Amino acid sequence: HVWLTLKEKNPAPRFMLFQEKLAMPSMHRFYLLLALQAVSGQLHEVQHPKLQVDEIGHVDTMTPRQLSSLPSAATSAYDGMMFSGGIKVDGQTIWTSRLCTNQCMEPPMTSTIVIGDVQRDAPQAHRWSWRKVSEIAVNHSTKGFCTGPEDPRIDSVQGRPFVLANVNREDPASACPTDADARSDVIRRQVLILLGSQTPTSQCILHVDEPGFDQCQNQKNWASLVPKDSDTIFVVYSLMPFQVMSVSQETCKARFLKPNSFQVPDFSQVRSGTRYVHGIDVAEGAIYWSVAHTPPMEYEAVLSAVLVRPAARGDRGTQPYSFELLGWSCGFPIDGLLDESLQFAYPNSILDFQADTDLAEVTFHIDDSLNRVVKLRGVRSWLEKAYGVWKAGGSFRCDTRKVQSVERQLAAATNSSNSSRTKVDVMGQSGKFTVYNDKKGKAKGINVNMDAIREVNALGDTVGASGRIKHSLQTFAS
Image (cartoon, rainbow, N blue to C red; front, side):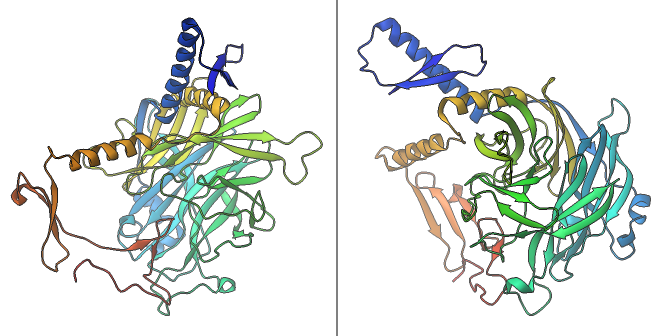
């Protein structure tokens, strides 16, 4: 089978698959090779985005006066701020952020979330300051090492802002195992907070109404996707596999669009980050995009694209839209966002996107302590190329085969009779060991000392530290 491209007025190339005995004139083979090279080159550009950074702005923490005005500040000494992000609704910006005690670093700590406005200090300034701050009182359990709402993401439906966050919650109906003492973490649930004029008007804990769904699993990092003119909130639950839920504002239930189809997600390659925003319109509908990220502690930015198709006229009953994953890119760095002293940058909101100028404003929190606004160019170009790749061959994802090929080459080199060998020397029963090249000796090797050992689930949460069954193995020492 070979692929041929047809030039049309549509800027996205279409491809046609046909069978052919490759006994063709040399000129035909030449044009076929050019077509194949073009497809391959476009896929590489989609898998490895190159976005231009126009500006990086620093979001300041709240002033002491603003902090003291919060109702809960009387009992909680907030000294950390993270997950600052916002949206633009009808020309107005609305921001949300998480405030923490103990600098958002050391448990036990408590958190709260605020809403307000963040503006530049001056038209050309690179510093942003909080204005008109108010606190959202969110109901939650007081048990656990980390209490209070976390990871607030703001979006809007029909022009009405809402916040999705997660809170620690005791849920007797689920009969989830917990420790008898009140210091162990309880289950974290997603909470939906509907806002009106920047004040909360209602809030509820979301319940996933799906057979076979593990109600004892922590629920975090749902990425909202609200199509234009939609009165329903949708959320992308996972990218691997691609699973979307609708959220009822009336019943506070979340349901997968394909009933009885839930699959345990795989978060080993990519995880959700920001909300999805409208990117470009195409013949099939509209493409929405988000900035996702690779797993901890790498947290590289990843572009994700979803095709939203409106239902046919007269067939918009309970399911007005369908969603198809175009794909996601490999992780890529944001130039200038991190220096040698900083470890990771987590994408948490898309403040604005102007498709006509191809300019996006994306917020990141860094090392759970700093907050940045980054102006990026190139997302629209990436979406157009991603659409072309999808039209050519369906959904795409980061190609890990090159990494696997390099690993095979390294393995082959290590097994070569002409190469030196890598050895490991275990230091008694301490759990420490040295990795070294046998030609250079142990003195020039790497000493490895284990800091901790723990088991995590697909969401990255520690398991075996609480509940009825605990793990006894906490070290490599024997």
